[in-house]
Amino acid sequence: MSNQYPTLTQMGITSFDNISRYQLRREGRADVLKIYYHRPKGSLLSRSKKFTFARPKSLGPVEFQKTEQWHQLEDTSPVLRQALLELHTLLGSEVRTDDTTADTKKQLLADLEHMERVMQDKLDELRRQIEALK
Image (cartoon, rainbow, N blue to C red):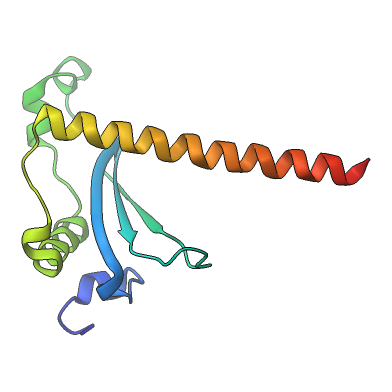
């Protein structure tokens, strides 16, 4: 199966059957691809992997860089583009490509709830460690 997805394999992804979805976002001067996996409860394997692809240094005037036209001109990494094509092929119709406000809001709320759970678990762990020191 790795021959079918050479870019993903090169990125270190081997559990193709366990990929549930992916998310692409922009952070500063980089594109961030996050791949999520189906994992059974209690699994020690990570539930996601994050890959950062730097964008090329800009050569245009600063004023032009702030415009929408500039963002459309910027090019993403060819490795990222190929990885996205392979992910789309791998997940097929499971991936929704519509970018509606409702879907974005739903995803943001889900990310917020996930972050709250992670933070609460970390706080609980720190409290247990403090109690163990007494």
